[in-house]
Image (tube, rainbow, N blue to C red; front, side):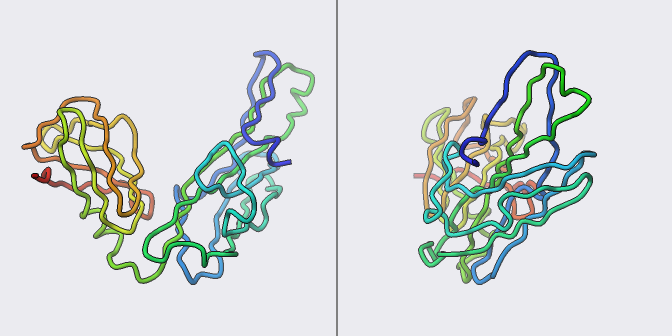
Length: 237
């Protein structure tokens, strides 16, 4: 059932469009090792009941992984949320012993919001969308050597070419780099946010030239889903 409904769009003619309105509290989920479960709060803001499906994927947004590929289950995974009400989805660990203990692991929590039929428009041609929301789910082992707040300060930037830089993430955390700016002019150099993997280096194409001798500021997404801005210099060879 779920494989058939993911990203489905039911088309007829352009007389109307219907959207559902179930949302997730927060922009990211952090599952701490040792926890028996973590709750995700859903809210239905419309005046009709809504049917939602939830699942977890491991990075491929176009596929539903097999159950044994994901070390969590969701309860419930399919639920009806009454008008103007909420629903808690529990994330329950199953086989987390397979996950790394020296760094975070990244998964994605998916919500497919299936809008109800509008009786007033049942005889009207329309386009109907199933609305999908997808947010990051981090599994965070205990006893990592540094805190997330310290990890943001550890990013290292190196100018490779006039519009290419190298970013080193020497920490055990996934860090979402939102933008990179000239510290003086506050001009953005990234076309979109970038996920930096733990203990990894990534080369980034910039949308304009940057000088290696200028001070830069960079913005990251913190644990509560807000922007945190720091400044640094390019590292030298």
